Length: 233
Image (cartoon, rainbow, N blue to C red; front, side):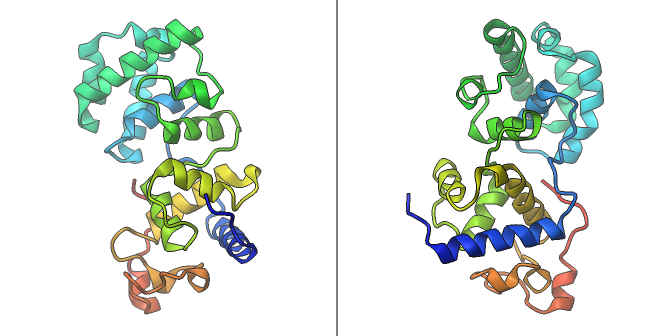
C-alpha cells in the first residue's frame, strides 16, 4: 500500500467535507431496527435494490424477529417472503445458514467484531463493515461498486480489489470518518457520479476530480438532467 502524499490527503478530505455538505442526510439506505435486521437486509440487498429490500423487511421481521426464529423458519414460507427480491432460493438458504450460525456460535446475537462477522456464512468484509459502522458505531469503510468507482475516478486509488481499496482509502482519513465517508461516496455515486454518464457538470466536487468530463457531460444544464433526487442501488 502506497504512503499517501499530503496533497492527496488534503484533497480527499476536502471532497469528503463538500459531499457531507451536499448530502447532510446521508445514511444507510436500508431500513433496520437492530444489528440482526441490518445484517439480514444487507445480505438480501445483493443483486437487488435497497428499495425492494425495504419493502419486504416488515413482513420478514414480523415473521422472524431474531436469529432463533429465523433459524427455525419454514423454508417455503421464507422463500415466499423474499421471493420479490429474485434469487429467492439462494437468499433463503443464505438467511437460514446465517441465522443458524448465529444461534450455534453466538447465542443468537450478532457479534461486534470484524473477525467474527466475516466467519459467518455469506458475510464478507463489505457486509461486516456495514453492520459494524451502522449498528455498532464501529468505524468501517464499505467498498461497494459505487465506492470503488468513485475512489478511482477521484484519483484516490488505482486498485480494484475491494480489500486493498479499503486499506488504501482508510489511510487518507481519520478512522472516525470512515463510516460517514462510505455513505457520502455511495450517495454521490447513486445520485450524480453514475457508472454510465455521470453528471459531471452538476458535480459539487468537480474541481477536485481528475476524471471530470471523461465520461459525463460538463454542460450544467445537460448534467442536471442526470441528477437523481433518490439513490438507486
